[in-house]
Length: 138
Image (cartoon, rainbow, N blue to C red):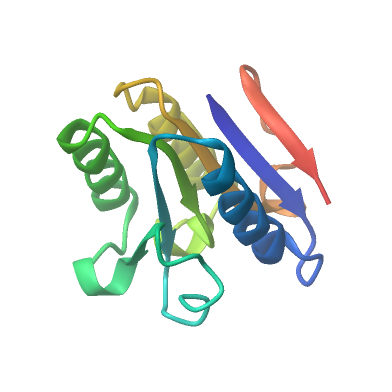
């Protein structure tokens, strides 16, 4: 299931994502992965959650992000959740069509029924068809 945390800049989407990941760690037997575009939040994410700095893996466009997430999930079936902060920037999205492609690509990830959580700005998804997606508004 794809879950989008939506809100304007500065609304606390990143902190919500971090809190969700840290809280889920208490309730799961599986593994969690947190993907961000820098190390700024590494210390806020529990050390038992695999923190990935997208820049260290040269993830800078949609195809690389899709391939990375697919590879991580297919390489370890114990992963229950993937949290992606700044998904718009990591994927190199610049238009609403890019955001639609980002969402579609994450919906296409077929691996171990893991849930994917992503943060996006509300204005980036306005007017897009968001079916079969759980929306968390800030």
